[in-house]
Length: 605
Image 1 (cartoon, rainbow, N blue to C red):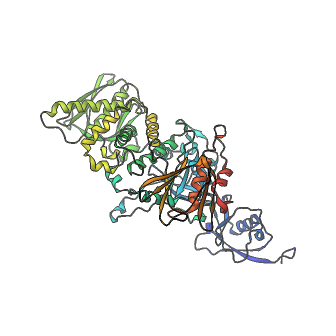
Image 2 (cartoon, one colour; image 1 turned 135 degrees about the horizontal axis):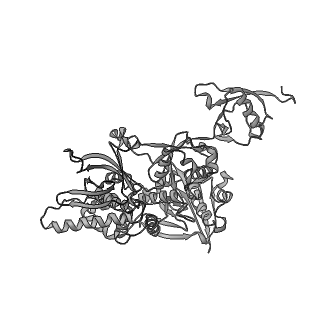
Image 3 (spheres, rainbow, N blue to C red; image 1 turned 180 degrees about the horizontal axis):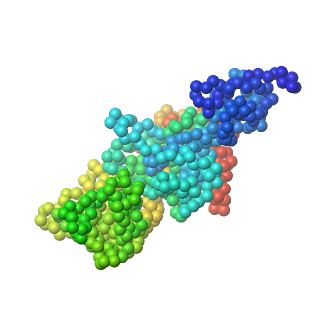
């Protein structure tokens, strides 16, 4: 017996750090012992020296964390039959980003998902995390052949949690990304738009064929009010991070590099996979802007020839890298991490073309200042695309400018037009290469246009749209892309299949930042629109899983949800109302309590 006459009993706890085969640790406790005391006894008994500050107890049967360490076992209602696990609250999670890259990072499994997302966004330097959330991935059907294409996973699990709670910026990026070149490379992948995907990659992806298809994805959102553990997400599971609420607040290109890049990628994929409808004219403009933004980094195999060196070998192939204002070359791509064979500084070089499109000859002639006069070097490119990019880069480099310079894209463009003119002038001889090897324009548009146009028909249409956007900086091009996307009629709609009270048929509810729409599947059209600013109140009857909303003018609607839990719909509506309450002066502090009040429902409160 305990000092004050309370019964002492055995509590068994599984300690994750002892390994999966280890038996549970048995502690003798009394019901007035608080959770902190249980943890203290546990740590003493395991005799492992380590930092236990992130560990907590998880109660298996009740699926809840015991985070209130001052509560007694009695207050929690824990008896000898309780199965408790002692484990870290932060565990590795595979996170697939809108740009298709997968990161592995330590995420919080014990806080509500809303806070878990805040932590993830702090680590990745994304402001306004309330606009994003996590969802369960759509399982891609694995073909037998795909075994070897194991995707690359970029590891951020070593980032200390302390640096995430208070990240300090260094050169505009969080300090934990400045630790090593590997980490810096990961940050670059988060903050630079990905090159256009191959047309077959686009064609292979799942594309929704109807508004009902579009509704299914929204059944996969995680509940913001509950933690990952409570939703069956395990260590090392895969989830997607996506923008959920299409109400983007206070966008500042200077601070929002990652946020904007990921938003652009999410928009681009929505357009390429026909998740949102747009006109052909808009599609060509989206195509032109993507072409414009293809990230300016040049690495490729080129051939080099130095007439001065009396070798008969002629052209030799090396791996070339364009950095700042110089060109370095290496024996092979694999060796490009080490020291280059030679680095050519282009500042003050003379750059001249030596091109014959008909003969497919694309040479860049460089005259490099040297103590004993000018050194002559020829670079040989394989095709027009490669030539236009390297020639443009050499021209910029010779003027002391880098690829980040806003004139890089227009330089490429003018070289391409020059090549195109050469082609038309020789086309009367009938020996034009059939394919303009610039970018495969099918990479820039959705599959319906792959069927409608061959690339050579598509290219002039995209170049035509390109004339309207040339001269933009990369940031402006990205912002323009997002503006056009946000102006599409269906922008920001998330669909759910519902059944209205008293009706027998399925209908679709579209949830937008400022309104709800009702789509009659028979007609395939919007039959009703309700605006949030006319909404008096809404509530959920959790027992019959029904959402009821009252609007001004005595308008009442009630519906049950077919493709998503009604908590998801409740959270969408409450979330949008929350987004509209954010005001300028309070933009730094997030009223988290209000978010939970508006989206939580009775389980959360």
